[in-house]
Each structure stands twice: as structure tokens, then as C-alpha cells.
Length: 271
Image 1 (cartoon, rainbow, N blue to C red):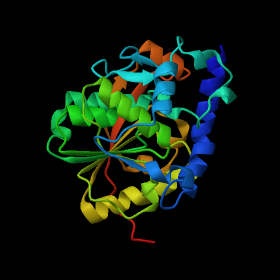
Image 2 (tube, one colour):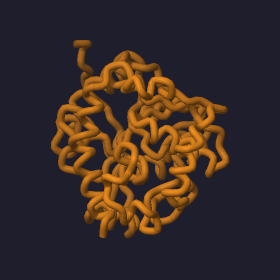
Image 3 (cartoon, rainbow, N blue to C red):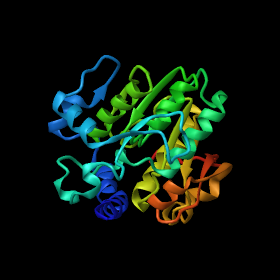
């Protein structure tokens, strides 16, 4: 029962606390984490953090849309499923949940490798890293995973190891406050949980498309904040997946998740 409190706090956090951090970080993480704001292959993890994550997550590939991908997640067999959330020693573990939008994106990429094959891919708000992993498995030439939580970056490296992949580069810089990067494809799942953040994402994605003709794919299970945002009128539905029962239970009855292609008719000029 304790994890019901975890899930509720995490869902609220995605709409409040984390959104404030995304909005406020301009150019990088706090001083404490500057030393680990970017990882690449061969980068070692803090042994203490590695041990904590390995002890307090479970390796699983069931209950979600991509059984090909093994991940370290919080499950009912984990200690912190039952513990009070304030006993978790790091930032809220959004990365330890495989959110429905990310599941849909990952499934779509695995089923349609041509979408990423030979292309550069940015996984924005990567969380557990599953979509970035799917891109590597499907032949992307370059993958960068981005999440503002440094612990998420460490978890992604562990998840790469689980799937016998060399870790891809990971950045915890808030890149939506930076210049538009030159990527062939940007993927983002479950990111439209706050109106101000959604507005900022909308402008930045438009800039990427206008400057670099970037393709953008968005995964979302139909949350109100996403469906009610103006970006929704500029989306093309690519595919809809029925969510496994376990994922439905974790997400309070959401039954499906959709991959959308973002195709703005007009792009905003730089403000």
C-alpha cells in the first residue's frame, strides 16, 4: 500500500516539483552535480550509488510493452515499494517507473527500426532510458539521452549493462533552455504534465524543426494536460498500443498509449 503513496507523489511531482526544475534550470545542473553532468561510454559510476540502485530496484522485462528490454524499476518486491517516500535518499525516482508514453515510443521503434536506423536520436526526458536503448538496438547511428536527474543518468548506465549495450552519452543539462540541437529525430514521452513546461517544449521543438528539419515523435497515454494543450492540434497519430494490465494498474486506469508525429504547419520565429 505504501507504493500507492509513492505513485501519487510521483504523479503530482511530474506536474509540480519536476516541472519547476525543468523551467528553472538554465544551462545546467546544480553545483553539486556539475562533475557528472555528462556521461559517455567507459564512465564509471559512484560505487555507493550503484550499490544502492542495485539493492533497491528489481530487474524486470515483464508487465510492459517491450519485453525485449530489461530495466531496473521499483516493483512490489522492492523495499521502497513499502517504505515511506521521504526515506528515499535522492530526488524522486521518476526514472524507476516505465511510463506509458515511453513504452509506446520504445515499442514503435523496436517494431519499426527504419525510423532510427542510421540516424541521430535525442531522447528527451529519458527517465529509465528505455527509448534510447530501443534506438540503439534498432540501429541509430548516434543517441543522446537527456534527463535533469543525475540518478536517472546512473540508472540508464545500469540499464545499458543489463541489455549488453555500451552506454550511450547522457546529459543532465536542461537542453530546452539551450540552442536547438541538430538531431535527425527527437523522441519524448510523458513530458506534457505542466502547462508552462509544455509551452516551452512547444517553442523549442518548433525551433528544432524550423532550423534543422528535425522529426519529432511524442508518446503519451492521453493525459488531460497533453490533450488540452495547443500542440495537440498539430499532431498526427502514428499508432496506438493497448497497455498491459500491470501498466494500467500503475497508471490509474489508463488503457492505451499513443505515438504522435509532431507536424507544425508553421514554426515560431525566435523570441
